[in-house]
Image (cartoon, rainbow, N blue to C red; front, side, top):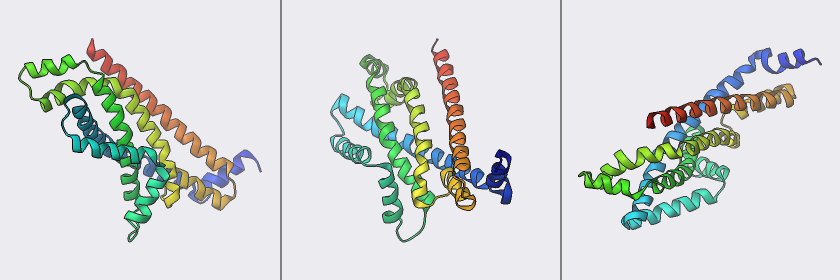
Length: 227
């Protein structure tokens, strides 16, 4: 069978390329929603932990955050996804919602440590300067510390987003029709695994290269604003 015939069999006949298109949509949707959850929760955890590190306050919340980080970072993402899908939502089938929650909670643990390291890297004098201007601790954290920390950790956050995008491929474990699942659907019909898998890998690569370029451009833009 020629290259053209195999390409037509896998992607053109019966509109099998649509499996990949719908898979791309679901993959991107899961990544964006989970990243939003991860950033929101991660920043909150980072603020709680950095506040405890610098002031000694919020001991109980800091203790709970440490337990959360230990559990999430100490267990496989696949297991977390299966627990959310088969245990938490055992009575109803909610694969997409399960993916949002599982990947969002997992991402939050890593975002929290990334942001906390950025906050702790800011000179303590910045906090003192903000307080001397009459700002409260929360105001100084929001308007002075976090903007500077965000610029410092942007490359690490970008990398976390890219890792999250690729990790969504494990959604095949709960039969969620993401990009990887789409390649398997094609292979199950054509009995050709090379073409669909290579196509899926190429699509992931293109998305990652584009995101790397986009985040790099954003980082350079933010650095220019500092001058």
